[in-house]
Amino acid sequence: MNQAEREMLPSRRIADALRRSIAERTFRPGDRLPSERDLAARYRTARNTAREAIGLLQAEGLVDVRHGKGAFVRRQTPMIRLGADRYSNRVRRETGLSPFRAEAQRQGKTARVDVPEIGRIKPPTDVAARLNVPEDDLSVVARVNHYFADDDPVQIGITYIPWAIAEGSVLATEAKTGTGSIYARFEELGHRITRAREEITARMPRPDETVALAIPPGVPVVEVLHTGIDQEGRAFEVTRFVMRADLNGLDYDLPVED
Amino acid sequence: MNQAEREMLPSRRIADALRRSIAERTFRPGDRLPSERDLAARYRTARNTAREAIGLLQAEGLVDVRHGKGAFVRRQTPMIRLGADRYSNRVRRETGLSPFRAEAQRQGKTARVDVPEIGRIKPPTDVAARLNVPEDDLSVVARVNHYFADDDPVQIGITYIPWAIAEGSVLATEAKTGTGSIYARFEELGHRITRAREEITARMPRPDETVALAIPPGVPVVEVLHTGIDQEGRAFEVTRFVMRADLNGLDYDLPVED
DNA sequence: TAGTGGTCTAGACCACCAT
DNA sequence: TGGTGGTCTAGACCACTAT
Image (cartoon, rainbow over all chains, first blue to last red; front, side, top):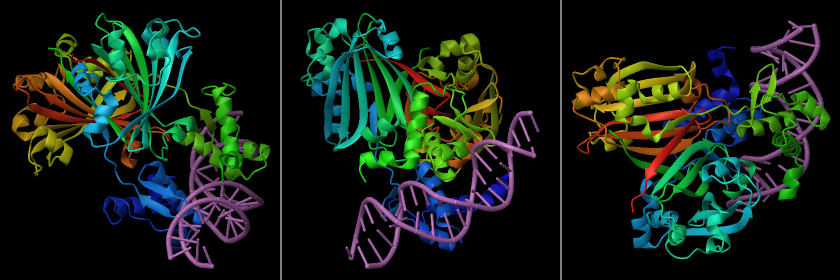
């Protein structure tokens, strides 16, 4: 079957027609598409075939399907832009806010951070390598953070701290780390962040992430493995962020060596 | 219908069982899953129901389905890691290679770059804003690049250059820009890259990108809007990269201001 | 209540792949 | 050739939403 014939498949034809209508703004963001039964009648196909067409658009992230209501052209939501300066010690001192809260405030959103879990665990392999700790039981403290903007879940972050650093401090036990974000506590423990390494990938969410972040079909996640490095070049914390790709972006400003 | 009942849906039950088998390495990367007809018989469902289950795993990026052969657990392929130092003028001078070629070489892959299209056009809105040029006809030159590693397409890049800068140089007309990458040509024109801004998002590919990059279902793309800034703080080029998220990652090393 | 999507059945025929 | 996935049909019943 060649390209032209593939185009003739009823499900593709319907999907292509709808996609074109969306691109040409015949259907605009927020508009409802014709119902599956309407499309089936109009194209003289079985309902499943029309349904398949809408499924294609859904997987592309073009439409949102709502049970009992219909399929709607997805609105592009304003993004949270996590800037390269979000770890700035100056910004932290001046605002007393953590990176996420500072960013949310800048965009007029209400930030909320839940810490559903803190515990001493065995680190994942990639984390252990970056922290230079053994991949042993209990060598790190893991702090799970759920980030909300205007009560919508937008990010998950798991911060891993070597037990040797966290032991005895609020980092090991308390959900609330006080003013100035968690980096103020690290500074009190002798670790001032001077460099960060960020390794970025994207992928489709796992089922548990789909639930935790309420991710609709057709939306990937961005995963950032962040390593905080102190004034002596030591890695003192690693955080794995998982973000809804439709609600978050990253913004880096890089000096280029000559 | 509550959570427990949803788990009882035949298609979910099959998908969950397969997902668990993959996680427990009963089925390992590269292994073939049971055929749709096998699954349907084993779970006493219609074939379409078993097919639906495999479709869920495919959308999650867990399996690759090959027509006439079966569904296979996806292998995680080694990634191209685009480092923060990839625009380094020193690296360019020392190796005579463009960022992509240098990166590919470092990982033992054969790089190829096609330039299927060069032309003077009206810039997209976001590009015009970053280059400080009017959103007018013909205000920029667009250079399309297709990047291959070992003959597999892994990235697309469209570089936009203000006509005022490109006019009269090879940048405006020639696919091959000579040794030292395109940044050597910019330097000859008086623009040495000293800073770069990179704005990162992820999303599902558009149909044309799916074709150009041969992207399998369940794999998102990473989009990087890169702005090159010269010694006088002027933006002299913008490149929009679109990368297969399963074959590419980004790696930044950031100084943190005190 | 009527209209919408969500899931499933039990077939059918086609295209691709290996033997 | 037989087994695999790809697509489609023509129904059915359920769950959600609005009126």
